[in-house]
Image 1 (tube, rainbow, N blue to C red):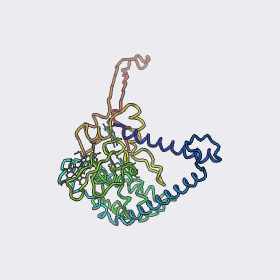
Image 2 (cartoon, helix red, strand yellow):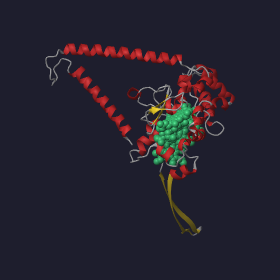
Image 3 (cartoon, protein in one colour):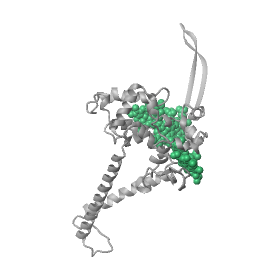
Length: 350
Ligand code: HEC
Ligand code: HEC
Ligand code: HEC
Ligand code: HEC
Ligand code: HEC
């Protein structure tokens, strides 16, 4: 089950060794004095370096071209309204053939990832972020709610609504308006729907597995798919691995952001605590399959999950103690409680 993770580690180590080799080539053999056991000693080292240089330039040029064409593509695709962004990832059509998954998902936290539980706990926290955070921070560029742009919301949205990265600042303003009006109806259309997990965020290692295709849904195999709008079924190697959930369930503060934010850290504690202690189950094992709850993916609000959360051993001895003459004999108790966390991470989280 852990193969995917170890393959990734090997790849990183491989990359490191590769860099080492490049360094020794570039620096230690600078004057061609190092020990070289090349089978072709007649090769001109200057020509070699020149070739290396030209190829590097070419690669750099092609990469730059690729990145600029990608960002151009992204720019032309920015959604201009909540409606447009919601329509892009609308998954109401999936219900026709996957009713059970749909009904379970509808109840899940993923279906209200911007509104949040209860009356809109997450939405309310967005307001706090703006009033007590962004508007009070000297260098945020936000002095009133209307100044909020997409970049200010991405610190949260990278997990709560990753597709917001494809929206223009008009959408940020629309969201802020809805937040101020407490209008959760407007926001409810924005969520982590079927197409976020089964398409947009289904591929983790995009340089090896390719970028997600717009005509496909991603699952456990490559084949055709009956849905006319998404006629292709592609295999996502990450889908049944913990790393898939980990992309939003938090490793730590998110240092890639100008203002790191910490919310969920379940994946971090899973990797650094549960796995090193010999844990073998994936997020999917416990949250999707173990109790047959499927796409509802429940946690502490579910009784079966609560029961599975911890073992508790309680030992108690009651006795009488003669304290002193004034107070006499008083009843005392010693209570020993041992709690063992049976989940795959620290609890509570977030
Ligand atoms: C017209 C019916 C139909 C619609 C609409 C439909 N599907 Fe499917 N889907 C199927 C069928 C049938 C299969 C089983 C294919 C197989 O096993 O070869 C399937 C398989 C899948 C799988 C793969 C399961 C696996 O083996 O890993 C996923 C994921 C999936 N659908 C997601 C979706 C999503 C997301 C939508 C909405 C965007 C959707 N489907 C819409 C009929 C449909
Ligand atoms: C939070 C991410 C997430 C969302 C949202 C999500 N799925 Fe899935 N889905 C998964 C994962 C992960 C699996 C593989 C589960 C496993 O390993 O057992 C899966 C499996 C499936 C399968 C194949 C297995 C099965 O249960 O039949 C289908 C079909 C499917 N999903 C359809 C949907 C549809 C339709 C929606 C929207 C109503 C949806 N999914 C929303 C993550 C998601
Ligand atoms: C695209 C990001 C994303 C992915 C992928 C994702 N989640 Fe989530 N998940 C969230 C967010 C955001 C919330 C909280 C939404 C809220 O209530 O505001 C959440 C909530 C949950 C909860 C409920 C927590 C609670 O407070 O009750 C569970 C359990 C959960 N996810 C499990 C999973 C599992 C298991 C997977 C992988 C199969 C997964 N998630 C994949 C973003 C994601
Ligand atoms: C060995 C089983 C197991 C594994 C593995 C596991 N979980 Fe959990 N998880 C649970 C149980 C049980 C609960 C309910 C805890 C409770 O009642 O407080 C839970 C709770 C949660 C919660 C709610 C946290 C809270 O505040 O109480 C989230 C979110 C979550 N899990 C996500 C994940 C993700 C993401 C993964 C993979 C990185 C994962 N879980 C792996 C069993 C597991
Ligand atoms: C690393 C990903 C990530 C980031 C960044 C993030 N969140 Fe979360 N957030 C989650 C997940 C996953 C949950 C689900 C519960 C958990 O793990 O405890 C959650 C839960 C919550 C909850 C409780 C939801 C409920 O329904 O009870 C609130 C509120 C919340 N987040 C607000 C925010 C705000 C506001 C920001 C930005 C300042 C933010 N989060 C940043 C992933 C993230």
